[in-house]
Length: 313
Ligand code: ASP
Image (cartoon, rainbow, N blue to C red; front, side, top):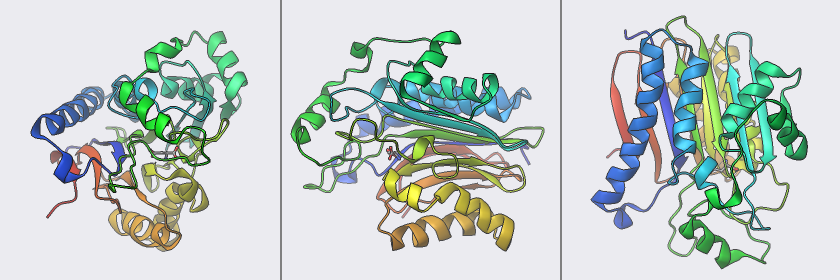
């Protein structure tokens, strides 16, 4: 056993295999690898799981390829409202922010809510005011501008439709670029973190699963740490992350079985699409998704490493 483990995701659903070029694939994989390595560097030196997931998510937030931080999608008002949450499995401490604007790294703000406030969840203006009081870096709107995402928004702007990042129902290409990380550290503590720009053309004030503890993010040392990606409304209705934890705690399911049951069965029963990453207290990793692919990378407790996009086989 390696004794530590980490997994990250950059969204479930991907550019169709037929549209993927070797160059694009390399760019995505390099970005995932960089984020994974940042988390690994912390864990192998005996650092905490919470530091590792925060660092890995920050790295993905700073990369324009993913729908979080810098690469966040446009909402119906042409703004970027971001959601993020973080949780540690030891005492089940958690912090979350939603509908925040201009924050460079929403995951850092979520952690500050966890550590420097008596609350778990702050939204909008209140979260931004809290950010200012706690020296959180802000950036201007141009920082988030991305030509591809702007065009994506122009296509559905003014309509009642909203869509997952890169999703294009006509050619069935989907990519949900939300990012997340889960980790087990050498002290046996688990942690999970998730960050997103949400969905293109989402209503002003819409909050997805990524900032909701129990839906998009959950961690409990007795069972596992989880970060989700997909159509957030379904993940909220399915209380997906907590459901995996419950199957392990109350039914004694092993990690893979619990994660598969939730993503491949319960979520599909309500037509939910997406996936999750999970690590348990032994360093086992599960990465189920019911879409064509999920940007993901991991190092398991046995030292096995991989970066993958599509389903195997
Ligand atoms: N779950 C995110 C949301 O609904 C979207 C995603 O995973 O890309 O906001």
